[in-house]
Amino acid sequence: ALDSRAVNHKVFECLIKSGSFDGFGAARSALAECLDRILDYASRRRKEIEEGQATLFSSESLPEPKPDESLVEWAEEDRLRYERETLGLYLTGHPLRQFENELEDRATHTTANLHASLNGKATVLGLISRLRKIKIKTGKNAGRFMAKLVLEDLVSTVAVTVFADRLEEFERELVEDNIVLLTGSVRGEGADVEMTVDTIETLDLPSKSSVAAQSIEIRIRAGVSTSDLL
Image (cartoon, rainbow, N blue to C red):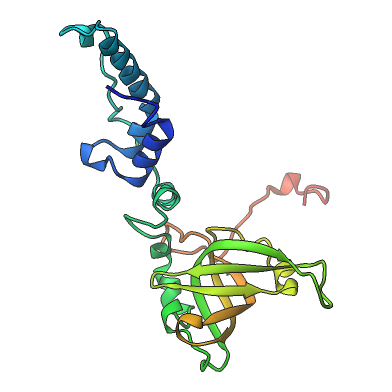
């Protein structure tokens, strides 16, 4: 029996998204798909019990819904996003794992080994979180906006400041959960280390093909290659 006043739809949805029901052996996508039917079944069974109508054969007229085993599990990107939404952390993986080549080839540091003695500059690959824009109240930039964010990589996090000019230049890239290659100045030491943005580059998901295209060939039949068509 289910008392929906104590455990409602949202609670069960969060439990599914966080992986708390993985032990039942059903895909999270399948559990989410049949959640409404399961809760409706449980509610009706509870009502039967409360009214004294439940019998040994009640379940025959009211069959218990089962998750559809044929449903494909959520894509990794969605699964991880749901874990982060419900738990505040990634549990079964991390989005940055897809960019390990870039981490090795293009990032100069991780968030854990940043310090002010790096000749002032560092490049870190990470995920944008806790982004907030702040209106500047005084000085020559009064009325404009700057931003504060936390950049998270596979090791730790670092606080980042984006001043007004850089915010306007890279506003498209500055989106929560975007994976970016961030280059900037480093100041502070230890727990007080921070970065100030110089450039931000959004990274695309790695191609499933191991061969990158070097050119594209377009063929047009001679009989229709008019100036207007070209």
